[in-house]
Image 1 (cartoon, rainbow over the protein chains, first blue to last red):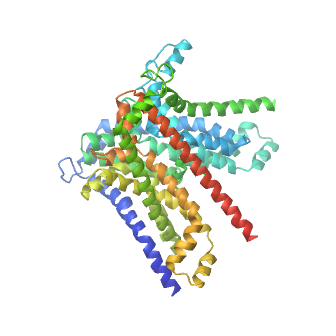
Image 2: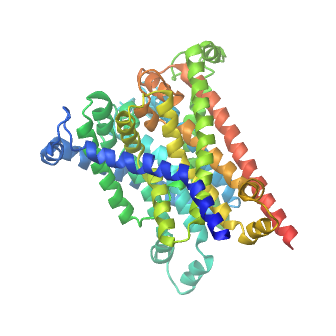
Image 3: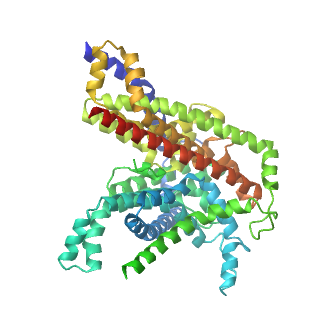
Length: 278
Length: 270
């Protein structure tokens, strides 16, 4: 009796949620894959994939996109690891962490917009460059500015998972390593870094995948010089209306995502992206 | 020596901290500048805020954005909470893991993929693009975070509590409304707040499914920013900064409340 009751309760709970999974998780992905087999006139074809894999433009774009995502991830990691490490040594790590996370609650577009002002011809960055004697440079619409702004936006998402794994590291391991005569570098490379690798992997996952698809930054900051996979998808869907080709690039992006998830150990901890430790 | 090293460490943290906040402060500071570029501060004025409040189009967009955020997070919280209860009730581990994996798909997918696939989906079902499609998309991408926030709370709840209520004659509805929901309320609240910020923050998905007639703040900021500097956006960012602060503080207090609540329960048990 009780079991039956529980069963009926179970199905009642499940109706809206299952509908959501079917309609908004499974159906859209299948539709995207289905759409990738149609050309702009709505005929079934494999031509999109042929074009993609034989055109040097598309392949170069993919390589470029991955390369930029790599640079952004590397820059973010180099800044975030020491930050997370030092954060753990402060007296009030939770407070500092909250302060690092706070900027993620500000709309991304507003942050990008701020950099349009900062990097502009007579903006504060160029004023500073003139002040130290380098003289004004073209900063906005360069590859540098794209990487800088993307890294700026992603830093909190990298700091958080790394901090979590560093804070779990037992100090006794570090002490033991020092007692056994390891140098600081050896302690770091043989003990601390390997033990915090899960956090680094989660961080890479949280930064690399979105970096492949930051189309608004390539438009606002990169001045359309950098074309990422995301930019290409947006272009095909909303400007040229070639949904088939856009979907093909989308499928490539999904494959890239799966590869990255596989390399970084699967478990999607993207909710770390919103800066929640609990 | 150690004293000095400690200062160096703090310097690095302060530097990161300053770099993170400088652009935001920069935006807000220039929202009070008399000029119309973000280059030199020309003296204090409220005029950009006055322009902002006189801009009825922008205010309408702001209200639409707020309406979408509130409606979508309420509905996502309802569906997500029921989903979490359902996931918790599954008996076979395989089913549970599959459901959790499916739940996480939208969390890890890039926004562009979500936006593009939803656009195909809405077009295939002939759902007109506009308020409805944006609302549906926001509900859809907010559900997984609600599930992830509520599920740990449900798992924390002991089954003897449910059995006791059932023994005392509670029916299913009473069990849900008077035992389960009050217990997992902190999780539901965090889920709601996260859904709210997801919705307010979203740009890419909305950009794909919004069509021509309807816009949210993010999309509007994007199209205005593409035209160049307009200090009205700075004034807007000042207001949104304030709103984000209120949300952060609200979230902080809910967390505080829930941890206090938890310690109370523990204390009583002793």
